[in-house]
Image 1: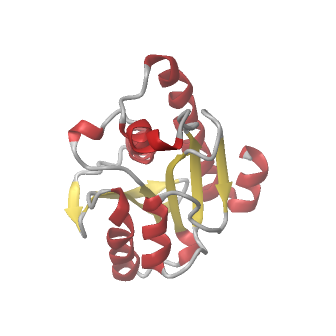
Image 2 (image 1 turned 90 degrees about the vertical axis):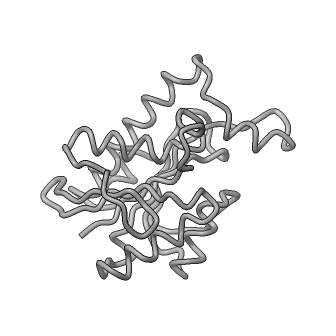
Length: 185
């Protein structure tokens, strides 16, 4: 079984923001594979189904970004999911706008949601699918940048990135992380 988690913030005011790209990827998977992410447990909306012959749980934590790991660890423990079968997708300012990057393991970088995930799982050994959102002109604008509505000029680029991120997750499920990294990185 795979746990596929998109990071984001729960309130409607955060929809269509750069920081909710992870939720957008989960929404694409949900739509394409008819897995309703509408049940609520462990501080998250989730749905269960099958993708590429693998049982999956699609998860959108509702704990706010900086506490995302609290929800993820509950799913991991309850469903006895191996770390190598956890896929977390999220926005990344360290990647250029529209780029995606897969990693089999690694640190949390500057992303507070990922810091929570690493801290709660007590490991860096899980799959990440990062979606590049670019970065603001000044470091002092980081919070406003990630939480503002996505400008029209960026929307098409990010929509393509969200689809690529979804496709990369499908590749992981079908052929493993190494082949997916070679294909998408």
